[in-house]
Length: 68
View 1: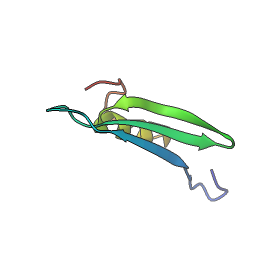
View 2 (view 1 turned 135 degrees about the vertical axis):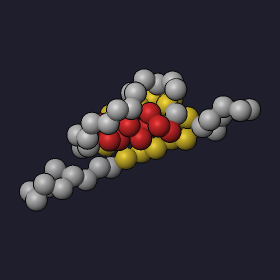
View 3 (view 1 turned 90 degrees about the vertical axis):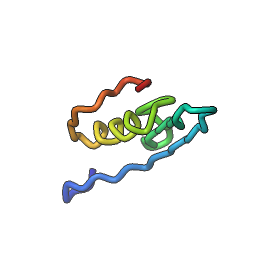
């Protein structure tokens, strides 16, 4: 967090193409100095976006489980 209250994230997003009728899956990591911390793994887009919101301290009524 910066001194003015703004937050900056270094994100790494991996999108896995799903086969057939399934939706694509996402793994998101946040860089913290010299290592990367996963905030979601192999999740649908709604769960992946909720993980980013949770990391930012915003609470939303979305599930954080890995499958829809």
